[in-house]
Each structure stands twice: as C-alpha cells, then as structure tokens.
Length: 225
Ligand SMILES: [Zn+2]
Image (cartoon, rainbow, N blue to C red; front, side, top):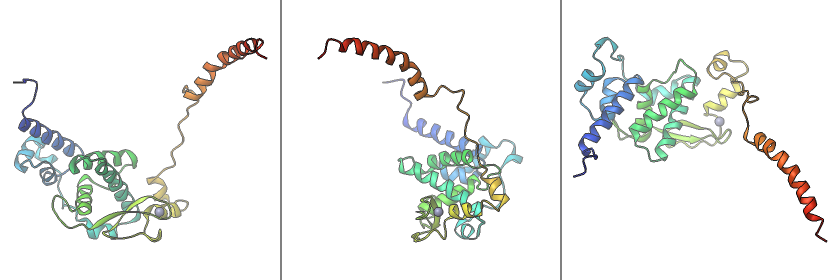
C-alpha cells in the first residue's frame, strides 16, 4: 500500500475545510460557507467562529431585484466580480473555488470599501449560473458593443447598444462625479526608470558585441568578392 497517498475521503474533507477557512476570511456568513463546502453549519460555527461575536450577521442578500435598482458603482463592481468569476469558470475551475478566487481578485482590483460582500458575490454567482440555492438563472454576462467590457444584465439580455453598460456610464460621468473618481482613481504608471528593462538590457549587452561583429564581419568580408 502506498503510504504517501491520502485516502480520498480525508482529501475531500481537507479541501472542504480549506475552502471554509478561505470563505470565512473573506467575510462569508456560516450559511453561505455551509452551502459552498457541504459541511454542517454547526461544525463550521464551532471551527471558524469560536468567538460568537465575530459571526457575520444581517439579512442574506437577494440580488435579482437589487441589481437592477442598485446605483452605478454597485452595478460596476458587481459586474467586475462576476466577470472575474466567469473567467475562472471558463478555465474549468469549480464554482466554489472560482467564487473564492474571483472575490479575492475583485478586492485586489477595486478600491476599498468594497461594495460587493462575499455573500453578495455568492448570491450573484448563484443567480447567474442557477447554482447552490436556485436552479433559475436571473442574470447573464453580456459584452458591451461600445466598450467591449463584460457586464451583468437580466438573463437572456442582448446588448444592442451601450445604454445599460455601467462601464460606459462610468466613463461618461468620470469628469464630473467625485464619487466615481474616488472609487476608480487614476493610478500613475509605475516608474520603471530604475528597473533594468529586458529590451534596454538586451541592447546594452549586444552593443559592444555588435561593434565587434561589425569589425569581424568587415575583416571577414575582405576575402569575399
Ligand atoms: Zn460599455
């Protein structure tokens, strides 16, 4: 028997526990973690929230109506989170792991305070793919014909214009709306002057050799017709 191999049931349980920990670190409520991992809520409560004061509380999100009435910045961030989720799903990553990965990426891309909670992202993804708590799809990710960004829309919607695209609206408002500017600040390009750039280094390294090659080439050519 190969002692180095972990029995599949233990491996499964370890993966579920790791996923549960990742979800809790991202602020998920116990019910969400239970759905994503298949672990019992009571066990999750014991393991993840020994301090009961730290248990995330509040009403669970309900996104199908919320999204269509949410303000522009919420719709933009929801679209970013779901576009990242979709990209990971298309790379054949399972829904729960894709949600965790996408949510981490979303927090890296958007400025705090983040308008989309982990539970909101879970709810949006569930309603987009008909997963976990529903078999009904309420959202589609569609490509804007104007800016080619992917945004969240009602299920089955086809974007014939950029009227519903939050990213196009964001660009239109950017110059006059300080909230939009604060949420998506212009980031200065990194100063790369001190960084040895590949092409520059290549040119520098090849310069003396080129001269030598030229000389060598010239002398070599003396014998040619
Ligand atoms: Zn657009």
